[in-house]
Image 1 (cartoon, one colour):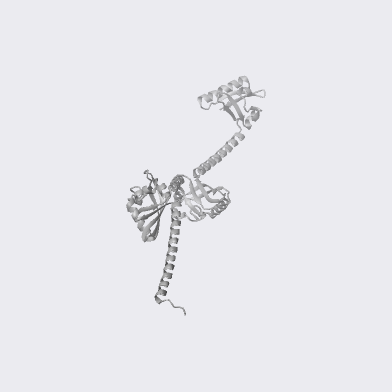
Image 2: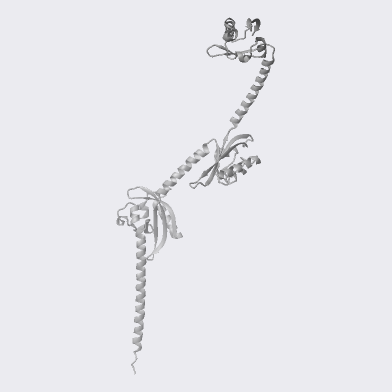
Length: 396
């Protein structure tokens, strides 16, 4: 019969087994921690973003991308600096960098993370814009800030160019004498320049966001509204169109406008906006109306004079005075044709000598020259020969 172990030996064996299991578990945890730490270190060092670890703003570790971003040789020179020491004394908003950095850290501690833009400074003194993401984490039981720094100089330059482009656009858009705006392809008013707003004494909020044909420039006439809706539909399909119409102004007067609407397309040829423009042509319309009225009066006067010229029983002739002082007959009326036996067409363009002969023509030329020289009417008796017959005339 086998002898049994004392109870003390059995208890010792149990402790040894438990100890080995604990030791094995601790080794596994240690190896796992080492692998995670190696993975984190690899990601940390190889990241293209500048990464830093800081405690209350004091940097105690960083990757090579951070060293290069700030223009340092290696991290031994870089550490331990406070984040505000990598910045100009004051931020663009006028706040001291140390003071503002403390506020940013406090926000990250309060919210778990905080993203913001920051003006940093390289080792050579050049300032540059960055975007910072502070993430509050715990390392070795201490609260630290895991900091990601991204260079946004290009973005800031592009934003500045966009702002300058917008400023120039607004300057041109609002200073032009033409009425102008921007519509969505469906006809919703997105922008209206100051000139167009002044015409109807409106503020931008009165019209922006409304369908264009429902704004005060158009609501006075349903037929004009319909014409505009058709023009917008054509522009949405890629076709520019124009027409003229009369629009009311804030003072109750009507303004004659020459209106056009053009489509604007993107790189794919899709219509992305419409540009409506209107030019005040009231002065031109008034001038055209006055010209038409003057032409009508002139025609009526011409018809009246033509009636007298053709129907009067007296001999009436018209002579053209040329720049060189010569005289050419333009023609004479029906009475002249009857009295002379010559048609108006026969004498048109001829000199006095060609119409009346050398001697009588010279006398006629002399009397015409005297009338021009004295700039007054002359009444004379003259003897003219027509068709071989000598005739006497009292000519004025």
